[in-house]
Image 1 (cartoon, rainbow, N blue to C red):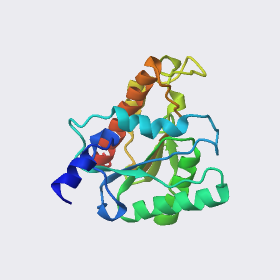
Image 2: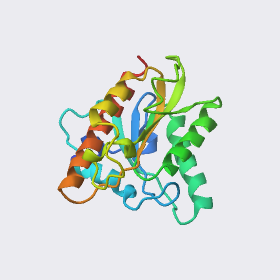
Image 3: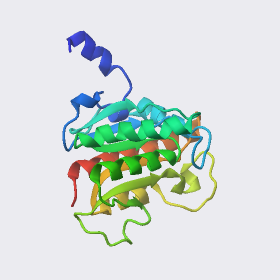
Length: 224
């Protein structure tokens, strides 16, 4: 890649200010983050598909993770579910086959479903999907591989533009739970948030960014 090409790529907004990579660039142990632009297939709520875009726009390049990269968005077909799910599962499988950990950002919980199916196909053993609230209750071993579900609908209303409830988790609660999971996380889905384009929306977007940073940091550390 020439210096001119590199400068052009550097100007493209990316998760956490990370370099943008292709599938063939991935290495074992790397953290690959991809956006999921779909919010009409499972517990739909309009606007969730924009989370990845908003997180890229507010990301900073200082202190960016060393072993992570932005893979762009997975290809989706939200109006054709029979085509959509096989395509997303196949793309997630291709990432996991490289030995990289995958973080799928945005959209509704259908992304988590597709990611879970891909992990099962690649690992060929039972890999549980663990939500944050479950993490400290399942008593899983450090060697147990898991998929982490980070549903941002669990945030308390104070940090959400369109709160469905007042009670819930604070950002520090979520980050603490992420850090305290001792099992081997091989894939993560962060979803369930539809940031508004206003002051309140900027607050929840920054909260989601901090949570994404915590997820990537935890994945780079590996199992405790």
